Image (cartoon, rainbow, N blue to C red; front, side, top):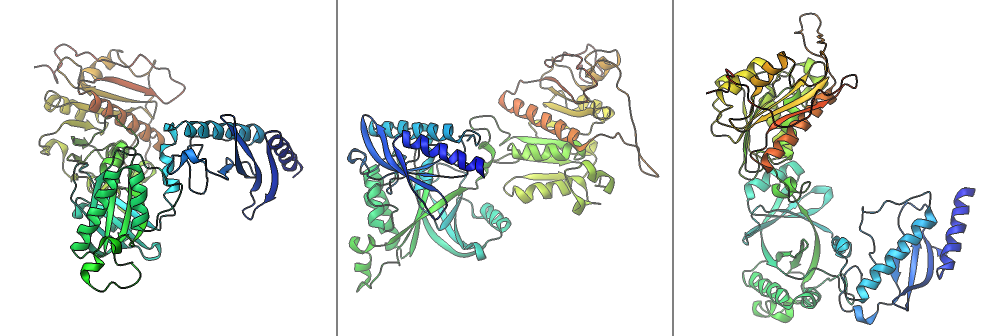
Length: 546
């Protein structure tokens, strides 16, 4: 307690030195300080709210908004709130509260200075959401075709969570996601209008948040007149068609924001239909900002790797849904496999046994089920838009059709030789396996005839070339009773093998000519035997030689 009081005393002293004096502790527990932000040789009266735990940056409000910033400005709310830090992009040092507070104060001055110079702070573009208001409605947007203008909207009942809206370009696909979210559709037929604007959204400094169509049109007109005119024309169109509500998607250069207009919310009663559809009457309609949550597959796939390669639209076959294959299938789907026109085949004729549970992606509810079928069900459960097909058959008898990438996650040497013989010449082939009792993990990707295949590698290993580690790997087997012998290693090793396989698959997606041998040593008692990279073909290899 004495340390906290000492830190607060130092904070008060530092703020006094920078022109802010302590006023009171407000109901939330924050400490209020009043003073001036000295920016461009001008004092700007402000109030600073300090979190006494020092776990959050101080909140800063301008007590009077400079006239040159009206009527709209980025990073500044109508109540004077100054957004000067990008959420999640700052690490606060609780052991140096005075230093971090002064750094925040300097950052606030820098941002205000840019605003007064009519400059936009790119790192803070996303802060508009904090000004869009306490959106009582959530809008889930499931739109794959970014060019499509004709969309469907409807409202679903979420029980205690309240009503939510959905926007989609494919009702059937979105319905699967709605079912998983636990909502039930209560009303269909709400029109959706999608409008593109060149203006970045900025809150109004005069009237905010907007609550009526008139206020929204005025605000949009300040940003871009063309967009404002389009919004009202679409509202009139919806009123003429007899709709009581309409949803808008505004595609700005930064992101898409949504709002609804309720045409039956106007107080008073117009004498006739014509008057109810008049401009004066419609401008009184209420407007509700909506939190836009994207649930389209493209967003899910590309969000974690913006601008990078994904496995979307690829036809991929994964043989082996066991220890490695289960985790690898999960990673492939999260990387886009089976989505946006792609297809993922899962091939395995084995069933999940209780003995598998210690290191398998699937859990107890899937015991005694075919691994390929159970894994497909699990993956589709959380990625309902993906096309994932299980083939519960012997891989040697499977009809794989046309594929772009074949992955072998069985870890069986003889089968790897068979694949290299029957598929390695015609399709890129990726082998993923674990060496010994979790000593190392390896992948081999062959995409061309000049590259070595899995049989080439095993032949080289037998004479001591291209091995994973220096020295001999001791083979360890386990098993009890009538249980089949197996090689013991932790589940984390299988996960790492799957991760390496997923990384190589993405490398292939980025460059179809990518190939080579990759090794990661897991057991620290061993040292890597050589570098990763291109693996040459062995002359007269019985598997890959013509």
